[in-house]
Image (cartoon, rainbow, N blue to C red):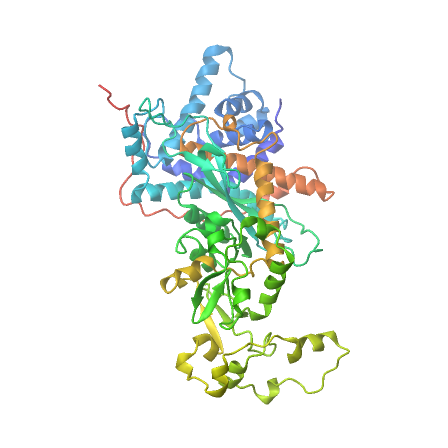
Length: 579
């Protein structure tokens, strides 16, 4: 196989625009010993290997660099003009590439340890605990931001070329399992896995478990405004990823991906996530996501459906604030409903869900810089959805807002907005004859509007945890949650099939979370390039990306260094003394 120099130049341009080789050069500058192969050459070889073979392995990268490049591309990378001859030269050149990758992972590893053999359980537990220290977490976050810049380079390229004009900012986020070749711990033998930070990833719905890591993927998606809404024209790219131990830091990993995404100036739309993210602590997921400008579309467990809390007297029902005098059958329509009932609601439940609509609080002002929104009573405003005698008594309408006495029955809009077409709030009988004072009534009935802050967990954690911006199980929610989740699952299936299969551990066999994160970033970068090429082909355009596409990927925002209190070791420690 001969790789065209044009393709090598394109991938090198993308690699240089990401800034990853430059960052690695700075980190390796103080490393003692000979410099060896530059990180730019190692990453270029891995990109070429993943692009042409679907595998991100050092062996395939060595073959691409020494046997598949044209003379012009060899000069760009500093590869010898002629391929190695004889077994000794082949072993020497391959070992140099292995050592270069080992130097990169060594300088990026928060807790370096010997991965040449399985450690005793007590030693592995000690090293795994070191990953949780502040210094190690800061280094791990820096590692994730660095490798994610490869994926963001393709996103920036699509943004600069205008391929994301049809994307409204909706994102589907989910964690998918990344199996590894290493075996799990063996309590019987007292030895740990080579992957000391790996764990068991359980697939939702089936319960199947795989040993490895969890990759939090953010996928470009869109919701439907109507059932017959035409599909949007944009490539469904992977917008970022985060590799970590399964079921650990689920919310913070998603926030880290979205934070890097918003730094590119991309729009923030609706974020749909499954119940694993609904179950997160609000301070680690819901609150920071709202502060980034995203609106949430969530799902609930059986015990979480129905009434979930309250805010200033308004009950929180299935993620939406409602009138305090909403009929009880409507509030408890979904209480105790199982998943099968929710997926295929009967006529009775569908009628109750539809009857909730007029009682929902209406959005008066969108989120501000801190993610707070303003809502108003459904009986307030120029277009109330219910009739309420309490509201008319506490806040009488001005003559300008009084309904017209003459109704044009030939106009459907006038008929539907008439008071006779709206439900009437049933206030207690005693309130008609002896109106209670304001201080005894719910705050939402006395105020014209209420403010719901993004960080409401300080006052009511249930509001911050369960509130969402689309009414649960209503038609807009179905046209939002289901398509975005479908795009998420479809992208996961696409990335885990075909020649480039990120779910195949043999395509990235090098051990260690640091190496796995780097190789996964290379594979997702190539996956995004494949998605772009397929999308261009479907639009009757060129079947491959051209030089102008790669030249359009402007420089990414600078990588902020974490606050690491102590210098981390950059060398490989000797094997533990087992005498």
